[in-house]
Amino acid sequence: MLRTHFSPKQAALGAALAAAVAVGGFAAGRAFSGSDEAVVASPPAAPSGPADATPLPTPRPADAIDTSRPGWGMPYIEADRALPRYDQVINGIRVGPTAYPDLGEWCAHGQAQWVDPGEAAGTPLALPERYPVKGVPAHARAVRCGGTIVSSEVTIEILPAPNARAEMAAGKSWFEVEHGGQVVILKQLVAAPGFASQVAAERWEPATVNGLPAALGRAILRDEFGESAVVVWDERRSLQVAVRGTDIHVDDLLAVAREALR
Image 1 (tube, helix red, strand yellow):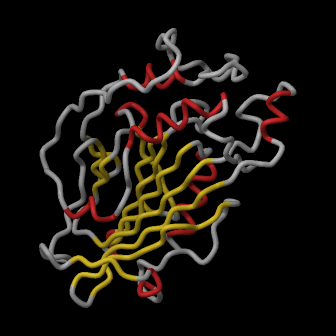
Image 2 (tube, helix red, strand yellow):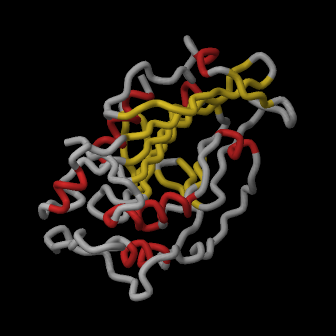
């Protein structure tokens, strides 16, 4: 089942929006700078929300989560903020707060130019023609260095079901309705893989996508609520594909990554 987005101004998604804002942008331009030194990052400032948002432990799969009250997700976000974040290597891929990829010789300083994503057609950096989620592509673009396309990206906005609010008012959980979210795909030519992310260190694990090594950063709750990411490394093509999700189920996140690697 595809999960889609409830308005962030409404009760169920207020916390999710705070999580999304905290992680910052995902533009390809960020990948053309950064340090190679591993650090332990301090948790960002707490998001605004109910004054009684006491951090809660991550619930077990069988535990009930009451999503009917305003700010229901805030305590879980607060608890996640307290978890350590540091650079580490998962499946040969560096991930963490300062885990930028090694761009090698693909792009010299000052060469990068934003161009139409259509210029990536026919190259390993071509963006998918279709997406396995019911979203609306937006903000697609590519980066050219000299005569070579070195990066491409697209944001997919997943809209809420028209009746999502009514379903929740009738007693359905946020996890049961098409509450929506966002997916961002970033494809890059790199000498060595790396992905700068604020996903907590303990939420990363090895995975495989289309037979290639991957690092999977799971969401805060139920494999769906909050930020998640999957980073895939195709060494033969010097290609890194990163997919970041907000309020996207892990199954949909991996499906998008598989399509992006075709």
